[in-house]
Image 1 (cartoon, rainbow, N blue to C red):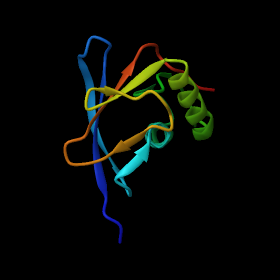
Image 2 (image 1 turned 45 degrees about the horizontal axis):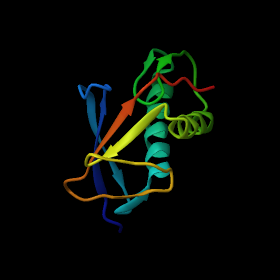
Image 3 (image 1 turned 180 degrees about the horizontal axis):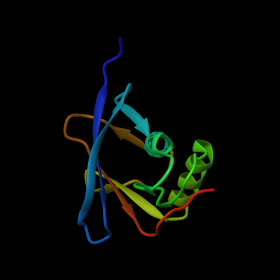
Length: 121
């Protein structure tokens, strides 16, 4: 059985004010930024699709009713990262590339900082 590695995440405004905090578990202690974004978006889509209405929190914001296509949302979030729609800090170090590696340990802190609201198709 694989050990779970828990990553502490937070969403913050550009001025550093935290909006929310949560934890995600990963099977590996080393992940790529694209894997982190994908996992976060899939969690957000799953949460939304269970409710099927209301405001979407997190990387994909907006008010939607009905189910959301997860793969379209992942593609939109990855494109937004590459277009500087949001950035990721890992222990106060900015992630520059989707392929950049993130080491997960007990003290790793990740912040998603949104510059513009993202709405996927």
